[in-house]
Length: 397
Image 1 (spheres, rainbow, N blue to C red):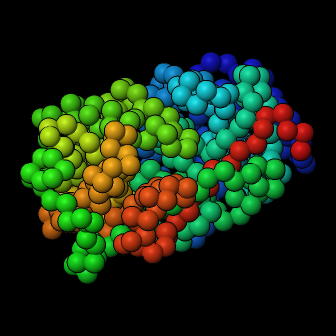
Image 2: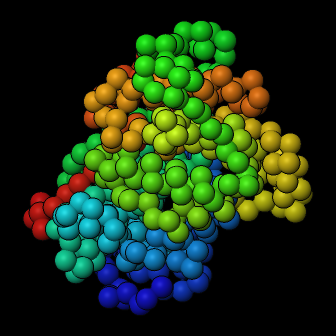
């Protein structure tokens, strides 16, 4: 990490002070702070230290190859009471064509003075970088943990999705940040009743038909690198016009494969080809909290033995569907409208070879009516909601 531009930034309220993360001890505290301040709150489950290290450590997280990021901790005396990241993602700015800086990793004791101090510190740093708008939270990219949880705190925690106390969203809004998009998650039960209720419109089937030769591929461990690149290109194409989209880089996909490879099975990947060309995809990620939620963020030696045993026997009972999308070329066509349904139907068909009793469809942008209609044709209401906020950097409010 490079040295920060300022070494001590007083907070505008009470006895708080917000300081940059400058040492290894600071960084370790930054990564583990949520479990210190949220311990005992209903619904909170601490993330694995190893997972947070991959996500936040500048020496490991691939986003640091194309982004300038500063971490800050809020202190009250000798006690850390909050954290925030200020992010200038150069790939995002190139894609958006706007000077939007982001904040992320926002976790704090639910007090207005702490939250506003952290946000103001991140905003001040982004102003120095020439940014005009601040958006977030994302950790540390729109391709990672996105949004602030505003509904669903009492539901089971899901892999790569953040948890925040109920009051935190209100405190962000009290600091004059305006909601700009909601991200929705739907809980899809994998049972005979759900499968029988869900039908692919138009009865699209695998094989030759009036819409071309349709084929479905699974994950191949021998070809995981090549399939990962196909997935990345499809994702970048399918999501390029979505709000807050950031193009996924090849080195980010390689890092994802390295992290997920040990738990992925052939059934987890759906690639749909039309006439031999990939046109749609979906990836299912097992929910690590199923097998690690009771072990704490830093498991004991016995905890590690339990975790390895659970991984080896794949004792997951839930998973998350991510990277569901269709190539831009088929937008507005009959086939393009049918492919997301076919991908979900294929995942439900595979449930007999996987141990999951349910999967999460998410997140889905509230403004994406097509994907919402698809999800809500199976599940009427989202069970979790996350929110993105914005504020102009020079807004005097």
